[in-house]
Amino acid sequence: MGAVALGGRHGVLGHMVLGKGHVGVVLRALWRGLETALKARRTDADRPSMMEEAEHLRRANEAGVGPRLHCFSRDFIVMELVEGPYFGEWAKAYDGEAGGFRSVVGELLRQVRSLDQAGLDHGELTRVRRHFIVSDRGPVIIDFESASVGRRVQNVTATVQSMFMNRGFGPMVERWFPGVDRERLLDTLKEYKSSLSEDAFIGVLEALGL
Image 1 (spheres, rainbow, N blue to C red):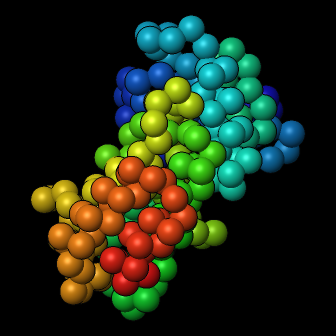
Image 2 (tube, helix red, strand yellow):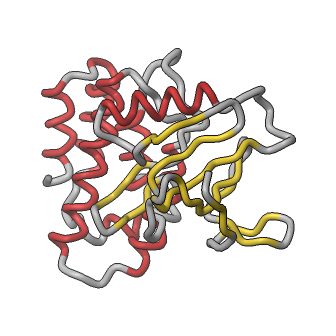
């Protein structure tokens, strides 16, 4: 590791960092001349190493999802630096065309569908506003510390419910999706949850007008 630097939107012990979670903190770092994100395991973390999270990120990468994994060890993960607002911040501030907003949501849903197909459940997409970053290259799913291959995947259903059925956050998204029939959407989500089929996923997209 060449160097690390403070700075970011989260505070830890009086210092600003890129991110923080129950397992680690994320710092800006230089690795082989490349600016990256370094996730370091917290001393009070409830797990012995970062190895499982890194393997989950690798699996996500194979599905075309998440920040690119560079390398990892017991206590550290070095990955692509993804910069931009969290989806919740982006959605609140968005003032462009409806098509631009809908395009980002559509891409997010395609990514969570890829995770479902890969058998990797993210585990925290009921809090969608903080687990997607809208970067210059498009939306990116982040933070796989709660991911699992040992439980039934629910990435699509959790994301859609968080976006469209959360009382606090839903209206911010729904304004760009006029005319969505909530009962039809719920029916398509139930069908998708039951079958996880491509046809059922298309049904979810169609219920949203995507």
